[in-house]
Amino acid sequence: MLTFISDYYQNYQIITPSDGAHYFFAYYDMRATGENGKHLCHRVKFWDRLPTAEDVCELGYLENGKFCKFAESTAWNFQQGAMLQYHPYLENTVYYNVCENGKFMTVTHNYVTGEKKYADRATACISPDGKWGLGINFGRIYAFRPGYGYAGFADIYADVNAPAEDGVFLVDMETGTSRQICFYDRLYSVAGFDKEDKVLINHITFNTDSDRFVMLVRSFPRDGKGWLTSMVIGDLQGNCHTVLNKTYVSHYYWTSPVDILAHCTVEGEKKSMYSINTDTGAWVEYDMPYFHEPVHNPDIHCNLSPGGNYIIGDGYEIDGNWGNPSYRALMAYSLKTGKSRELLRVKTKTPNGITDIRTDLHARFVWGGKYISFDTTQNDRREIVLIDTNALNF
Image 1 (tube, rainbow, N blue to C red):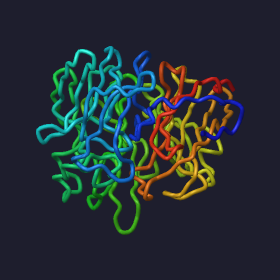
Image 2: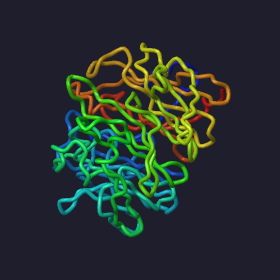
Image 3: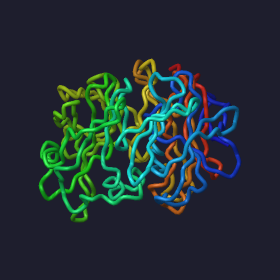
């Protein structure tokens, strides 16, 4: 059972089968349904270890409590799956990453006709207009954080701090061909790092107009210290500028062509949720206790409602440590009123205390904002839960 903190929610639906398998969608900022599409889903046989290069993840959609498989992939992880998501306007068409013929690639797949089209590299995001993808080195990410990279191919530039041959690759999703537009040997200094810092791009996402992107450039930990993050903005020609320099930046969400919502620090301020203009650097804090009080283990997988009125999201475990029974809270914040609500709490479990296989709720709006779905381990297995948005009325 889910634990409801208030009367806002009394009904919920587990939309995945109870058949011994584990089900999840993955990241909070990808299209699980689009306006009308069936809810996409990953299915795996285990949840207590990192996937290897041989572990198969089944891809499909959920319909009337059943899992309908249409593909498999060995290019996946528990945080972001195989980057499975709907095409922004082609019906019954999805994207996902695979490893075939010794190479990571992205597939555009119509699961009704069976038609497939392959890009020459795996993408970390697709533009909202469906024209472009951005490819980064998933082997380098795996060495940094296995929960976000792919097993199978080691980073061939592992011994180079900022390789000229690696960086960001712009993928033409129509032709399937890519070209390098950002180069680590230039990007590291733009992002404020030193030659002694080994750098990588951990997250990258297009803006709402598909003409620029944000990337979190991070340094591998060294000298007993953790990583630092720079928020860097790039365009389709590879021109880049840094908005936040060598600080704390976590989850984010584009709210306009130039504005981004991020849990971060700005100009020495506390960790909190800020709206940042990526052209001017101007910022506004959204002040909510959950965003910055240590008791809440602050952070949030921020997601904006289709109407732009509410932020929803979850952070990390509360009242527990990795591997111990605890809970995650699903929060909501009204941009109109500045009020907030804790919508519900969900028991959470991280098998064997391995943080890279944890189950974040990754709450996302589905079916045009009529519902919210999220991943959970409430019943000691990975499942997807569906709730309506009636509580977003404050």
